[in-house]
Image (cartoon, rainbow over all chains, first blue to last red; front, side):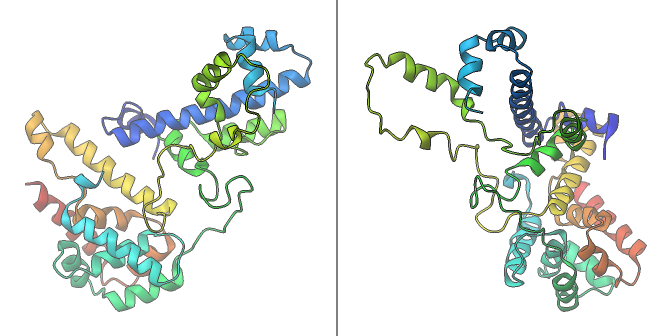
Length: 69
Length: 246
């Protein structure tokens, strides 16, 4: 169910349903990780600007996305 | 997807959903699908199953007692709409297919950061970033319309519903269907010539049966245990697939 054979068949899957589902899932994962990591950074006293620099997005964007969390 | 289901497999899936509903189950599982194949006497899979001593009534009884519905996990966020885990289980499978073990990532995050990745999974109002920004930019007056329902915007936007009209497919059933898709893909890759590869049949009754005989779903296992010869059944199912291909 995993490993090389699966990767070649699914990651670059010719079947759109599989390929697109993987993309969607990766986005969801990135979104959740970002939320968790930003909160952690804030708890450790990082400024919005510092977080934004590492994420390579604007300070305003980070703030807008995560200030409510 | 459905255009790649042949008639037999389409009937089987529809029957499976009916059977699950009749039994009062909340999900359609591989056991229901097996019964669905047995509910269509014109199907090739039906013949193979009958030849090995399986009949619809007994199968239904076994599925009714052995199918396991998942525990309902109330999602405080979206109690009705998005299933028990808000797409987490589905995404976990998708990520697994590209070599990412979401549960391990979740575990690591829990251990190191004390947060649960699954909380609010796929809950992402920020996906509408572009719009939100545009709205803000345009608003110059200070006290605009405070009471507009901005709150409502972010909700209910989790992409197309994966739910069919009726019951959702269980994890095990989706895994069976994935098994079929994988076999089709493999055969197509192994087939020389583009046109020939395209002619390799997709979802068929025979393929569903082959995949079901490989499933470790408890309901399927209970039914297959009553077959005269499991190896014989597997061989015949494989033969049905072979006939479709050539």
